[in-house]
Length: 533
Image (cartoon, rainbow, N blue to C red; front, side, top):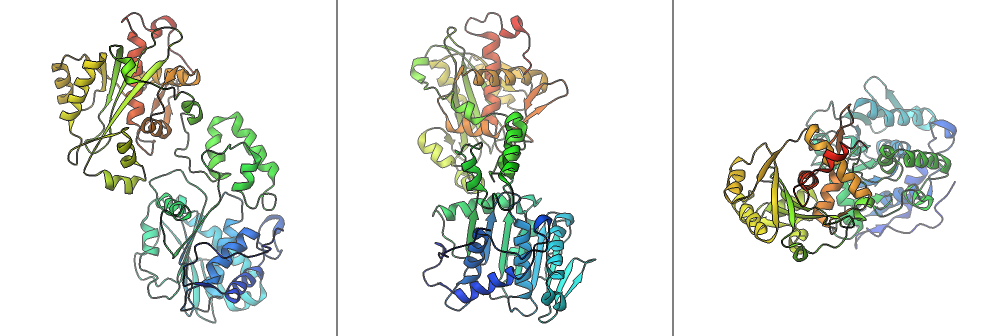
């Protein structure tokens, strides 16, 4: 067992706080008096691994001048099989039985009753295996409640499916697998104001990375990252994130060690290696490996575009060199308060040339700051860098975009503009009035599948040049694809958690560029038929 050799105080300790060794020792001693409950470890003393002890000492030993704990929220994000549930159960028991709080109310929260009962069962088994606690506690299995008789404190299981909205006087909350919460209701009820009557409530949030970037877990994850990076300061919030960085090589054993602090103790390296080999063979498994084993936030359950492959196509493009050349546009208007995308695709001049992509994006000026805070997406930075434009007001100004496309038409030979036939009737008429050929483009499998497959093929062959445009890259990374039984593929707006308008506009423009080319001659589809990948 790897033990903590020398404790070093947390860098997040406030200036007026101090480390109380006695308080920390007590918390560690309490937990280590418990026993493990599962597998090969069952019945053995709960010896804290070095990283676990560090967390316990930081939380329970960092005290304010008044003698109460500095941190009241701890966010621990860590891959699976690292001993999360055991640690969560031990903390729940410490808060219920060992914190000296009269009539303490401690709640174990999870997404559903089954998940919530996991930590409860571990806590109940820990009590049964510890004679001192067993004498003093009452386990009510039917209601999923543990009562500590000397102080009349209790530990109660709650799920997102069933909870009352008021009446809590919380001393502690243990949220297991926060990323599985279906919404933020339970979290808000438990953390907003319900512990105000207590002197040192503790919200212990423990989770693996998730996939939904609009969730309460991702919001808390972002806050933890900002505090770790020094962008935010919150002396009551204690962040711990074990995981691989986006730029890390997910197949590298060094990265596995970095992300899994209990590797070789609670989970064997051979297990991780086998999971990695399986993920290499099957790309659909890559995301679950990265999410569960390396604790990375992967955006969708199945990511369509490999960003590594996309980034290899970031060949420099110069707008001025393209003046006068034949190109095709794709227009995705989205809703009026959203991003509008217009993408030009230039077909290759010869066999050695590439398909060149020029994307343009617009966003309403008034709600940009609000969206930056809400979505955690750097729209403001992109605007300053010139990759995104704003239109006046709080909705996208279509007149401005029409004028912009008209100016583009003076610089480039825009043969056709493809658009989503749902919506944009007025704008289409206006563009036709300007002399553009505007073609409706269906969003079903029939129309979308051939160019979507073609885009993937061109990216893999490095026959696309997109200049590394950051907004388009972000949208490509957001794409979640849907496949029908016949093997047709299309980008799915509903499944994709973030914006993909630029990717859809690119596919539409690419379709027209492939079909019509530079000379409006025959299409690659005519000579070769549809491509099935």
